[in-house]
Length: 599
Image (tube, rainbow, N blue to C red; front, side, top):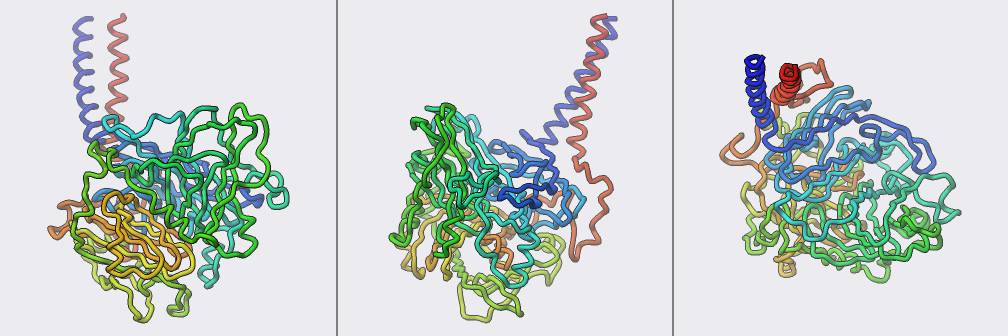
């Protein structure tokens, strides 16, 4: 009996070694695995039933809750009736643009198919979000939060909050995303949105003449005296929003992965695609509930805009009554057009705090690095190109080729795209083109966004964060560099550009790949206001960049390489399968050992 037990125990130890080895090889560190089913569900946030894009029957989608340097494996089943890509706003995909989820790097997941995103949250912390990147799908939902927590060895520069609350704010249309696409294809504007949602819910009935009965609204329950971290994301279509919580100060602590200087705001403008987190202390007397408001900014004076507000409720556990009365006032730029500019300039990096690493955020002395390359990128009013109403950057409207740019490079295809995108504005005839910007690896890039339109623009760069060193009204000139913040500029991935103004950012080009630079306003993006920035290692492929994943999807000129997906429900690597098999076998043999010993 003892000999038998000894043999079995030896087997157990051997299997334990196999399981541990397989797990380590498969994971390369902590791994967060999820499976997401992306499909439609019917809701009526503004009282009109409509199909929205949900993930695991959730709208907004589930939280991806990870820690710095973890690996994420997100297995996506596309149950929509059209192709799908998910992109990860602010997640840098270090040396791994294969996972970026935009048309320049990925073939879409066909309807009914399954694909697994695999990426590392390398050297990042903060509040981000994911969303579907194709064909205005985000106007139908499909978005959700990504929270990247600090490692235990890196202290957070504030006390642990008593709770963590995510709020998605954004303008909303009751038309479907396919109807909105049709409007843009016909050369029409989308017009004033039907409402503003907070966490995919309509407004609280703050005004009985404006808000119909029966709408479901968001209630944020809190305890008196406690402090909560609010992570707020503008995931709307095109509207800048002013966010505020009635009678409560909001202590700004983080912006898209950078800890900020901590200062209180009574309200903050959050532009499309931007994310912030605040600490809010429940220090009021709870005589009533309080309004949480997201209202439109930088819009026309048309009266109907004043009827469009997102309103949720902050409810203390000891609240004595419902919220009532007028909403708290928003700023008014008719009296001070610099209010929002100065507010944006006041958001600065906390230079003494660590973030993803223990060393202070300010230890990278970006202000002393020589600029090696400058792009001045100007947008203007819609232009007619080949009979179509299009949006442009430097008078080029991006036209995505059928073959993703990065795959074309990998397979040495020619003629898929050009590298003739102008780095400076000109009066050249407007054109549509699959054209990219070449940027020098290990260079230090200055990008100036010049907005010659009458509304706010927001721009986002995948693969990177940038230092927002300057912004103002008027035309940028080289002399504008004298006003740059060269010490504690906020380091983020999405920035606003004010009407008739400019914004300058600095980027350290240390991430090889092809990266999407886009207007975050979905209608402008759809109409061509984007470009790809190619950052290639001169030493060649697979020197600093990760190799293309085994599960790469193929399309366009490479579609013959695509194998049929016979078993779309599983895309596990052999290492993960071996780890799970070994662990299960280990468990079974352990039970045998226990039975033998006990008998």
